[in-house]
Image 1 (cartoon, rainbow, N blue to C red):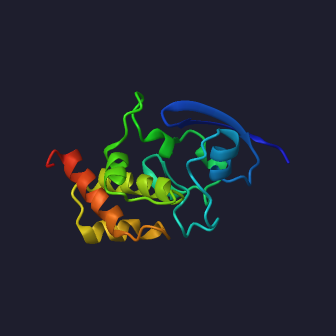
Image 2 (image 1 turned 90 degrees about the horizontal axis):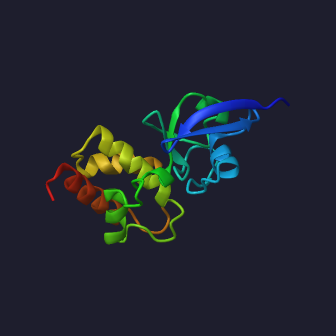
Length: 160
């Protein structure tokens, strides 16, 4: 099968790769670009472990084909910290609130929470729970995650 050349922007940098037309964006990110933060949990878009932003929209990268990244802007968990390496407020608050345990779901939850706060900088607890319902976590329960998102939102709004 003929491979397709794709040029995209990943975490602020131009990326080029060759991909099989049936290869998922998740596989391209992990296997070709070395960005292993996004995880494959289910392969069917049900768990949220592979969540990334494509042109600012939250997607399950296991359901997006790599060829669909052509000309798009992709942000993964590796792109959340600033270029100096300072953690995003969500990342810091997850640590402070112990909102992670095994860490398998954490990258997807963080990317999803970032997408939420970009749309709604002051979400209610119910809105946070609803938004993150597509991200399954088997370790923490969700209370610490919700509290971390609330705290990060307050800090990002300057209300902390």
